[in-house]
Image (cartoon, rainbow, N blue to C red; front, side):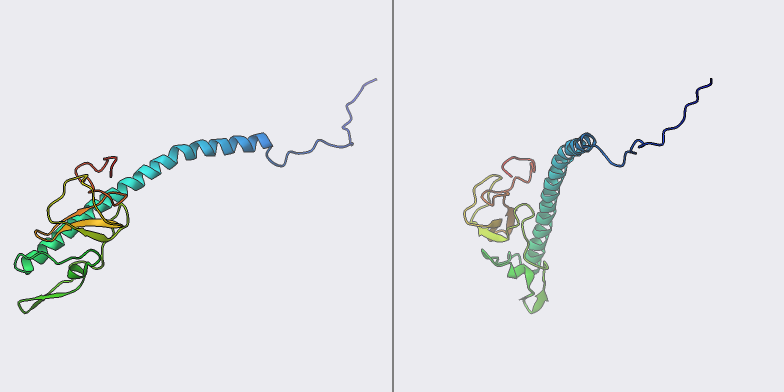
Amino acid sequence: MCSQLIPSHGPSRRHRRGFTLVEILVVVIILGILAAIVVPQYTSANDAAHKNTLGDQLRSLRQQVQLYKVQHDDNPPPLTATSWDALVQQSTFMGQTFGPYIQAAPRNGVNNFSNIAIVASDPNNGDPVSGTDIGFVYNPSNGGIWATNRAGTAIYNELDPNDPNN
C-alpha cells in the first residue's frame, strides 16, 4: 500500500499580519538612539547660527552709526535706553534729510532684547552691564556699540563667540 500525504483541510496556520511587540520596541529604541545623536548637533548648530547673526547685526549697526556720523558732522546718533529713533526715522541736518538708517529697532540675536545701556566709556568683553532686558550697549560720545550676552548681563565676547559666558 502506498501511503499518500493528504493535505489537511482543518484549521490552517494563521498568516502573520503585523509586528510583534519586540519588533516595535527595537524600532523605537533605534529611533531614540538616532534622536540622541542628532538633537545635540542641531542645538549647537542653532547656537552657532544665532552667534553668527549677532556678529553680522553688529557689523551692520556699526556701519549705519558711522554713516550717520558722516552725514551729521561727526555727531553720533542720540540713541536712548529704549529708543532707536535716531536710526529708524529720517533726520534733518543742515537742511538735508537723511535716513532712515535701519528698518526697525534691532533685537540682539542671542538674547532677543532690544533695550540699550548707555555708557560713558567703552566697555571690554565680559564687562558687566546694568539694567534689565539689555540687548546692546552704546557710547554716545563716540558712537561705539556692543552686544550683550545671552542673559543680557555682560558684554558679548565677539573675539571668542564660543566663550561660555556668552
